[in-house]
Image (cartoon, rainbow, N blue to C red):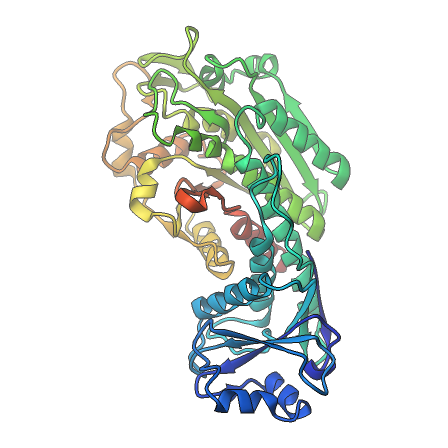
Length: 494
């Protein structure tokens, strides 16, 4: 979908559809007032008849109004004036695109960025319109023999009565890039495990590197063996698919600038291994690589935005399958950091591949490391599908990530990383064990990772509840690409 923002008057907009807002009580927005005057008050007459109440998200489509250039006019209810908040704005935008997709409109001009939304600025409004527009046309049927017809709507113009500034133009460019990153993350997440293997992920990273001038490095199992990544390799023993350690380097900042390293869990399928998962909904374990997908999506977004920052992606990728060679409960392995790990549950494998990747990340001399992983079912129980779990060893980093998530409408919630939880990982036979028991499962998983991140600022995002949806809306969400991209945008602004 193509996006742009430009100055235009609503009655003169040459478009298949112009979108205007109406508050409760029939109060027209300034743009709608200008339009109404030129259209011989046809909107006012419609409101007087009671055809549009202004209730949040309500819509009325009008055709062939006299004295205007557009073919159609979509009136959208905004709710009570002066009470428009962020959630209501998002509902309004979703209702707008739902109505537009019921038409054959190929383009539309939206006069919604001039709305006053509580505690939100113009950039936020532009971001959300672009991201929701992209979400509205996303489809998951690419592997069907007969995919559904693509939506007709392909071009969105954000109309404004005053000339848009550079910040507005930048917002459109950045939001479009984030939308592309989310699409990549969704596409990768939705692919089945027989297509999206560790090798496939590595190939996609290499293609991105070639097309966006990034540096890609793919380590094979023999390379990981030499580095002492026995924790990571223990997970892949039962699989016929070779593990990969994928790195992508984006160098948009000064040469001496220390990079942000994003580490994404890339389990392309997780059966649980010998600690086999229940059969119900096991197909959704193709989503266990959504951390990796979100990192690749973020790298695509920042490359398209050309952010002046250095960012490195590190993606440990493997399958976790049961086999005669698979790791067994009770096995002890040695991590790249030299710590020995007692594997009490082979289904707690994400932390086993991440710990070696986090140790490997130190060689880039990072300013900050953020890992992203569908790590624990406990986080789903704690936070559901609304917020990702956030842990950090540095409070300011946690605050920065929380602020980015709040602004991007990709929320996270901070959970404790207290020393009192560390004892749950004590082992009689190794330096630590890979599970801490039933209590505080997401916390002890983060505590496990923290043992390997003592040399740098680090945060962990547990996206087990937010990376995909189940049921009739089953599919990858593309989260937390918006949070990560906004965090990096904010760093550049500082």
